[in-house]
Image 1: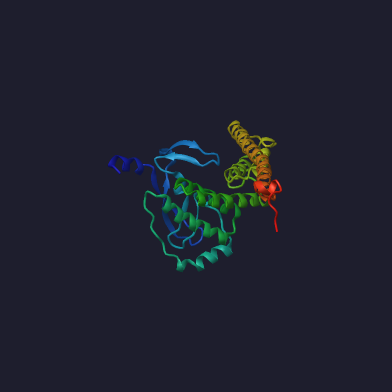
Image 2 (image 1 turned 60 degrees about the horizontal axis):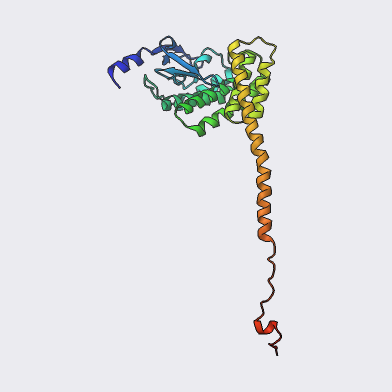
Length: 275
C-alpha cells in the first residue's frame, strides 16, 4: 500500500472514547468517519457499499477491561443488573486483543463474535438479529457464501421473533423498513414464499413509507415472483421427467418375446425325424 493510499485511509478512521455501561471503565475504539467515506450503493438487504473502507467492519465496539461488546448503535443502551453481574464475573477470563487501526474482515469478525456472545447474556433478541445480519455482510465481503447464508438465516429468525415481541421503532427502524428488511433476507436465503408475504406487508402498510422504500419493495416483489415462477416451471417439468423415466424403466422390465425355435431345412419339410 502506497503512502498516499494510507493517508486516504487514515482520514476515514478516528478514535472515539467510551465509558463502559458494565464495568464503568474508559476505553477507546476506532470508528469509521462516515463524512470521509463514499457510499457507492445500498444492496438489497440495506448493506451499504462504501469506499475506501467498509464501514460495517467498524460497527462493533469492545471494552478492553471486561470484554463487553455491542454494536455502535447500541452503545448507550442500559443493561440489566443480572447481565452486568454476569459479564463482570467473567471479566477475569477475558484477554483483550488490540485491534489494528485499519480493520480487515477477519479482524471485524473477532469483534462481532464478542458482541454476539454478549447478547447471550443480555438476552436482547433485536440486537442479536442485527449482529447476525451484519456478520453476514462481513462474510459477504469475504465471499464466504456458506457462512453468509448461515447468519442471514439466523437474522431472519430473530427479526421475526422481535417483530412479534417488541414495539416500534425496533433497532431504530420503523415498521415498513423493518418488514422490508425481513423480506429481503428471506429472498437472499431463497425462501420466496416468506419473502412475498413480508414484502406484501410493506406495500399494503398503513404507515407512510418513503418513495425510495416503496420502489425497493416493488422491485423485490417482482424479483420474488420471477423466482417463484421458475420454481413452478421446474416442478411442472419434474413429473414429466418422472413419467418418461418410468416408461423407459417399464420397457426395460418387459419380458422379451421368445422367438420360435428355428428348424433345419430338412426338419421343416418332414424329412428329419426325431427319435
